[in-house]
Image (cartoon, rainbow, N blue to C red; front, side, top):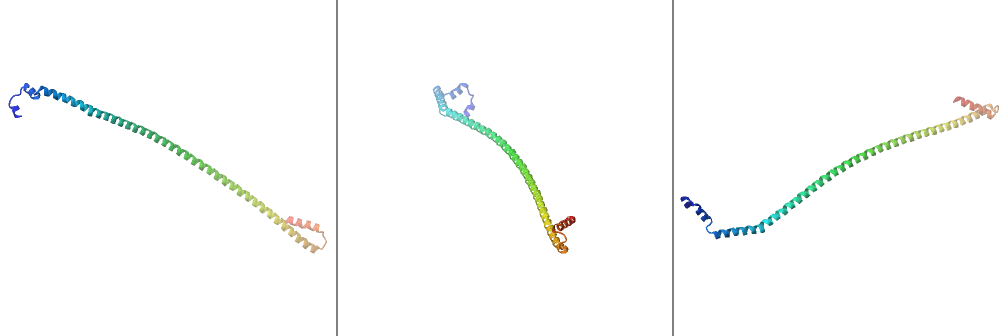
Length: 175
């Protein structure tokens, strides 16, 4: 390299240095063209085809993922809608059940009150009936005792029927 700097370089010398022999240059150019053709045919074209296939595969995967995401979003919205509807229906059913239970409770309480009133009235009637029965039994016993006592005292001055009427009138006046 030192010798290049020591003297001035002429253009013809540069061309002779770069292209020493025309036939060698033509052979290099032909070899380069053949090499580029072979590389294009065996390496570059298969590589481009593989890259195109890979790009298409990635595009398909991305499209499939986008479709699945859209379907998942739709399904999620639908599930949320169904869940909301189910909650509303559940609340309605619970409210209806509570209302029906409350109505049934009131019906049972009313029926129990009516039954209690009915039983109370029936017991009062039975007590009144037994009371009348006891009064009647006591009256008959008093009449018989009074009749026997009066019969012994009066000794046949008044008939039994008349005596019985007198005692009944007396007891009726006591009440």
